Amino acid sequence: MANEFFRTYGPDAAITISPRGQGIMEVFVDGEKIFDKKAEGNSYPDLARVRKMKEVITERITSLEAVPADN
Image 1: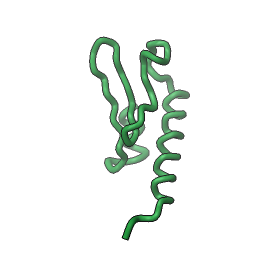
Image 2 (image 1 turned 60 degrees about the horizontal axis):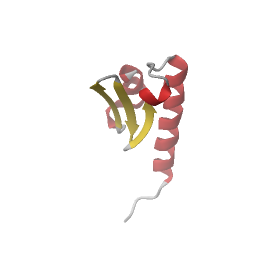
Image 3 (image 1 turned 180 degrees about the vertical axis):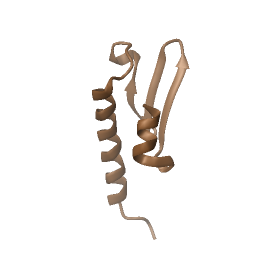
């Protein structure tokens, strides 16, 4: 999953995958949790779920690019 995100978005995307033991695995994009293993039936994401996460990430990046920078 991490390789899939890195290959698609490179090192500049603010994506954090947090495996913390005790069965906890969470994925955050720009501080927002988009995946929580425990909340999703305690199972690792399959390819379809990874694709859904990528859609959320792409939408977030697109919305951030649309915001004009403060001058």
